[in-house]
Amino acid sequence: MFDQKILSVSDELVKRAIGFGVWISTAESCTGGLIAGALTSVSGASACVGAGFVTYSNEAKIDALNVSPQSLDLYGAVSAEVAGEMARGAQTKAKAQLAIAVTGIAGPGGGSAEKPVGLVYIASAGGTDVHSLTVKEFKFGDIGRSEVRRETVLCALELGLLALKPQS
Image (cartoon, rainbow, N blue to C red; front, side, top):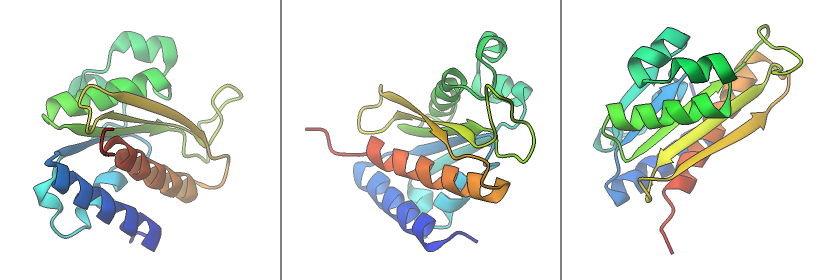
């Protein structure tokens, strides 16, 4: 189901989360649960994966994650602001120390000149610093729906790893 790279990063993230005693939650739009699926493909993930939210519609983002309707109106569902709110919402709702959120345009349709196919925002809230929030923009291009989703999953897992680095 998942390629070796995704499985390897998932395994490392689960091990690191268990080592830190951190609960992980996910909030997914364009990946539709694939990040949670990658994490739970790892044996022992039940020791660190608490909840996953698939919030494909704006209404689901508002209801499940407390994303602000004003943010959706001002910035759109595919935005750094909404990705950050999704991550914070998943962190709060699941009582997790780390939340990973994604929102984007996987294609083939749905893009525009301002927000083209392949535009994805990935956010991590918490980690070794439970108050941190990181949001990154990715422009994968029009590489096909499956590939945009694959790259999003991989980058989201890698962002989760970065959030669980030992503090110096």
